[in-house]
Image 1 (cartoon, rainbow, N blue to C red):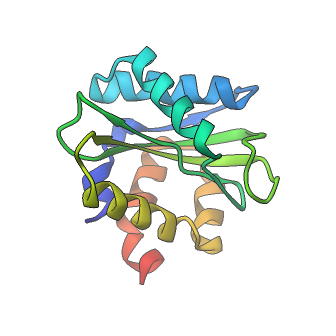
Image 2: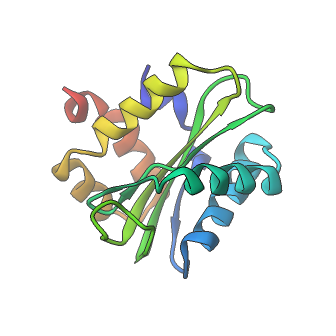
Length: 154
C-alpha cells in the first residue's frame, strides 16, 4: 500500500482559517464530500464519534482522524495543511497543522489498519513534516506526499 493509492490530487488542501477542532472536522468532511462523494453530515459525525474514543492527534503537530463509512469501497484519504495550527487535544498538547484523514469501508479491517500505520510512519519523520510545512501549494504537497514516500518510510 502506498499513499499514492490513498490520495487524489484534489484531496490535498491548504486551509488558512480554521478556529477549532470541530470546525476542522467539518472542513475534512466537506473535502471528503467534494472528492469522494461522502455525505458531509455522516462523515463529520463518524469522525467526531471516533474522536470521542480518544483524540487522534498523535503529537508533533500531526493528527490522523479516521472513520469508517458504508459508502466506501476502499480506503481513501485527505490531507490538509493548516496555515494556523489548532488545538486538537493531541497527546503532547501541541496544536495540529498537518491533518491526514482516512476513510475506510465498514468491513475494511486489515486494509484500514495498514493505511493508518503507513500514514503514521510517514508523518513520524520530522524532516518529511518540515518539508510539508514549508510548502503552501496543494499540488506540491501532493507530490511530496506521494513521491517522497519511499524515503520517508524506508
